[in-house]
Length: 254
Image (tube, rainbow, N blue to C red; front, side, top):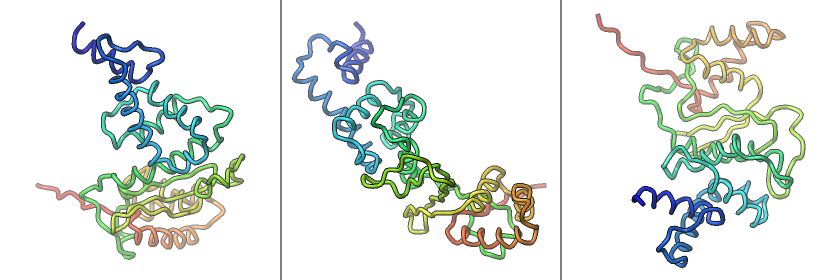
């Protein structure tokens, strides 16, 4: 048997010891150390990244969930910091809710993960802060360290003592961003703010006028002046938080 075959056999056993036989020639006492080490490392990282989600489960239920992820999910990234994102992909695409899983499980997990995602996001070198005067004259972009989010459940209120069984009557909107001190901040917003930011995010570099025209198409109950006034106030606040930015424009050489 080749070294690679032995290595694959070893990892298959570590991930699913009840289904895959241990490699020959290695005593079980030594294998038990590896089984515990690998699983505990994964469990510890997921527990630290999803503390609220973990608090909703008994210890056996939580270990069953993490064990299923560890045993069955084929991670696409070898980097330790990517494990939380891989866990989200697992819940979204490969996991079937059990009777004791809350209906908001995926949304809560995503809300908890987004803090890590924003904290390690690389800021684009060409991004520049905006003054209020620049908002109406510059191309606008959503910052590379900001996320415009909406959830059916009020994920920010969920705890062991507060577990909604039905989605909220209206969507819950948030902006998560990294401030000037590199701290991650959560900001509750509303449908119009979310619409503004989604338009900016979907078409990088739109100017203020084009953004207002798109908002007007989505909200015909308002007139152009109302849209412009509201958009300017909202985008001014978002610029102060660093959620929207402009970018250095490339110099054209002739």
